[in-house]
Length: 146
Image (cartoon, one colour):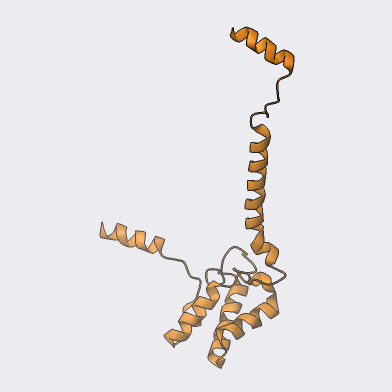
């Protein structure tokens, strides 16, 4: 039973592609490197962070991040450097800028458009407005009622 639980824990743990020779000696710098790596997209895989990818380009980016950390660059400086080199696409969570505003606004615009469609359909499919009865119709209605 213990082996089963141990295997289950190992399967549930996140898979990192960081190799032992990449790990920095300083635990704080290594944690910063992991945090930064988790925010960059692997340009080969495109659906994984560079921290999870085994692609050679992802390894190169992880090493580049660690080199900049050792030089003393801040997280923002490293992020700016990588974005300047590879473009905004490398970020898993793009920054909110004028060029990405439509990307961030699209979900809200879709929801708003859906609400407008629902309200318009409700209004159209509602009961037709009652029209005033003509004099003949009123007389016929009174005759039926009596």
